[in-house]
Length: 221
Image 1 (tube, one colour):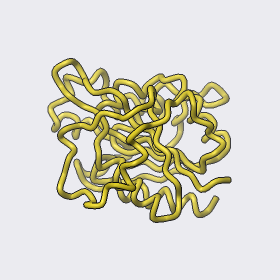
Image 2 (cartoon, rainbow, N blue to C red):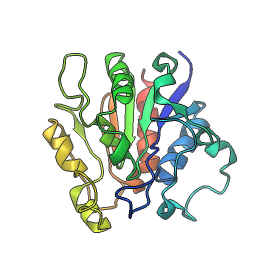
Image 3 (cartoon, rainbow, N blue to C red):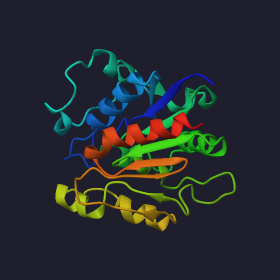
Image 4 (cartoon, rainbow, N blue to C red):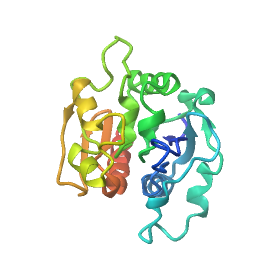
């Protein structure tokens, strides 16, 4: 199997016409850097393909200074419908509020996730990335995350952003409704949960450690 990791990003640039959104940059840059340094090729995909919108609030001086090689995969992402999942060792769903728009109940994403689950490959996600698990069923018709311990952007954190009245659902609530055991840490603190094959991070602060934990699981495959 090729040493490749598939990173999924959003195409949505608006929440409600008033709130600009997109990919939360840290949640791509830090994991992609970590994956590349570990010897993996990173391929980025999105529901529609092309260059994803970047949430303007996510630009930060804390991000790595050398972006050229790291950012290249999102210059032109592959449409989900054109992805061959057999080429990849793992999948990683990046966050940003845009994912709340175009990740849930996405047929192409569901098909990809079902492949990774069925083949026992590692499935990573951070912050709002687990929105991609919403509405997804495994090959037995059960919710993808049923009985799994995972984390993601919490109700508390959503309320602190002031977007709890803007998003169409609360991620923590929806994951619990799908049968997941939702495990949260302190608001906006680094918190990662590993429940093989899932590795999930709670928020942007968890981006790096989520990728590191995912690499640990990949080593044991």
